[in-house]
Length: 67
Image 1 (cartoon, rainbow, N blue to C red):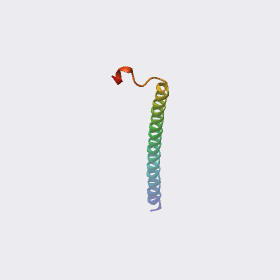
Image 2: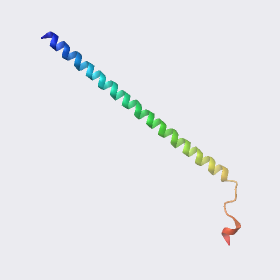
Image 3: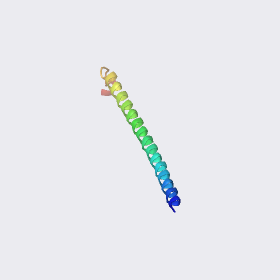
Image 4: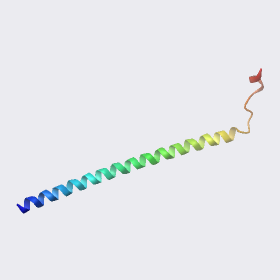
């Protein structure tokens, strides 16, 4: 009887460990995806800001647009 209970306990803890590792792996994947999205957003914002600064000194309207 004690052997059966020991085997059940070992099986339970092994399956709990596997579940924990799977959840930790999924959480790590979600963190990496969130970090990647943050980098893409920052890059896009930086490009828009640089384009705006580059065009700040240029003429916005041509003489033909007021005709």
